[in-house]
Length: 457
Ligand SMILES: Cc1cc2nc3c(=O)[nH]c(=O)nc-3n(C[C@H](O)[C@H](O)[C@H](O)COP(=O)(O)OP(=O)(O)OC[C@H]3O[C@@H](n4cnc5c(N)ncnc54)[C@H](O)[C@@H]3O)c2cc1C
Image 1 (cartoon, protein in one colour):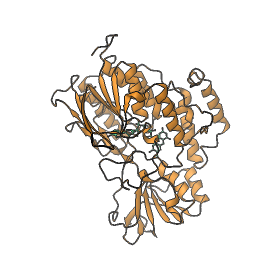
Image 2: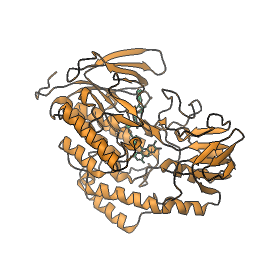
Image 3: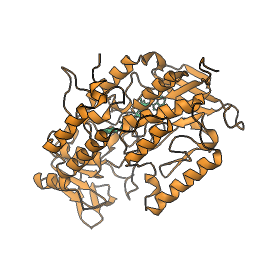
Image 4: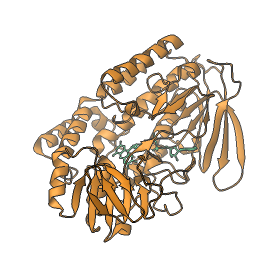
């Protein structure tokens, strides 16, 4: 199809109505495409649609399709100041009678997304309670721009199955749901409680228990800090015993929180042996060991795969060269300022689909991927961290692809300052804000993002 402006318009399926899928829907519509968003849940929000009921969820997430998508726990507050999180034209301002904290709880972010959805009239584009079970090429062998996709979905609560054909598919299914587990001797034989942080919600079930928490990244730290208030003893098992000043302060404050090395083995009688030969008897083990990329519905005949948590080959973590532009992914990179990044990526995809922007040739995209892998290897970054990109220039690069403005300097500064604060004051950084940061924030609030767009209906 061709729009009145002479651009190609496509019939696009977006999978997932989290932040990435929502902004993709908006950008596709802006660009003149017809888009439908298929969402397995009953509402929008993705990770931010809190699900307290995890009883039926398999605790180590071994099933192909999980029943519960969100891994968010009850007490979770965002890790960066709200000001930096909003989409570029829809600031995340605090509202009366809502959670007005600078680092609000998860519900506030969900409400922000609800507001975004309503403001841009996105709900009518979404089919809820619809799980995508299969995505495959209609005519395998015909690559390139004419390639079409078959999408098979199933109503979550019924048996109704639908099969549709689209010009393009955008995968926006997130990657913080499928538990990534370590391999530990004796893990399968362990008879006591054993869960992944994906199903952790509240500390109460661990009252008076001896708990081993595996992994000291964000979730491991957060969960340790709240479980320690009810548990008898908490052993935080980390890859390295060299920890940030912030975590070290927390450990010295709580007499029942101990830093231990990695687990060597688990035993049927409840013994947990650590690499330094020490041993404790525990009631529960909580794995805060991160998440795996998983696309259980996607059949690309082996063209796109996940290998050691690397999704590829993907040009700029977005387009598989031989299937571009009809198949794309949003939100694969981790550790970037999420929402504005998803927005640039969505703009770029929408514009490539309409023909406004051109992708490099297949050979050039493959070369770029190879060079990227090589540079990571030379920097000593493991394959499993391929998509960890803690680099603001990356956000700017994606903005350039769609000729959008770069990430504002104040966002970068506020983000860095929150990270630095968390390193030194882990327990309090969300509520203590020093004078320098306040000054930075006041500068941010004078920017067009807030002065021209800050008033939401
Ligand atoms: C504990 C935790 C804390 C976090 N804290 C922060 C934070 O402070 N700041 C921050 O910026 N980010 C944080 N994140 C990252 C968070 O994932 C992103 O903010 C954001 O939610 C990613 O958006 P997304 O749309 O890409 O994926 P998601 O939010 O995961 O949304 C994906 C959507 O796809 C749907 N879906 C999946 N599979 C299917 C299918 N087969 N069929 C149909 N629909 C499907 C899901 O139901 C979901 O609605 C956190 C994540 C976790 C787990």
